[in-house]
Image 1: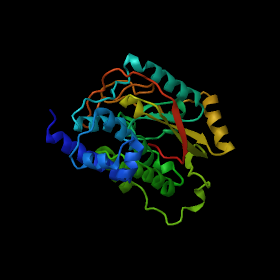
Image 2: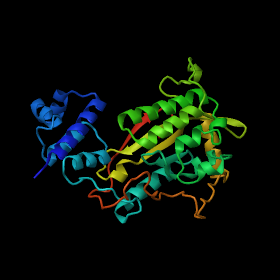
Image 3: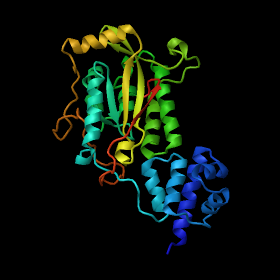
Image 4: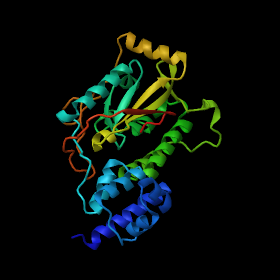
Length: 318
């Protein structure tokens, strides 16, 4: 028998997500294949939907898998999506695929990050760019936006920091508005205090479709764009939260410089320091321990891999 606590919990969470997405009750009903009356009854606590309906409502609102599990729990149902440790044998195909993509992107930099934008893995070309970064910023958990925007990190070498930093921050704000998380909010507050004031005139750095990262390197300058990739059909929380950011040369000079960097046998002049416990710094894809109250990743996913969905973006490490 279901009590009022489940109805009230689900009602509030569903209203919050619908408001966050800017979707009316009618639009949600049409997307989920039900009626506006039924959605209204659910949100008022007068009706408790079945498990399948909760999943359809969550899918219709594009709620992340982790939060879909929370929605099911609020309705009194067991979670539907497993959360598997990245080193679990069931995710070996995922790890193999991602490591292959990172290697294949050489000589251009690429990273894999989790939902907090903490580094999971990176190729040698990326580590080459971190030359001169303060050791604490390279110690796990290595946060990629902080690595770029902290004055102890790569920020002093970013030529267009005033423009590019706000491009990164704006992207993080959109993510925070769409999928709020405490750690992301704290990161935004931290980074906003570190970067220069937003310029009134973006200047000549816009290419018309993206903002390049202009990074001093050696005696020259690298101009980089990014693409962001994720598993579009993932049914495991861990896999769904992984993102790959691949940096691409914005001009022929940058492409030549990066090719020469690896071709001269200098794949990683800035090898990450060993963490305080003496373990080797992560280069290959390895799991990070759960943090900020997250439960340990568990279970085995029914489908460990999914089609990768790629979209172009203007240099915004997430």
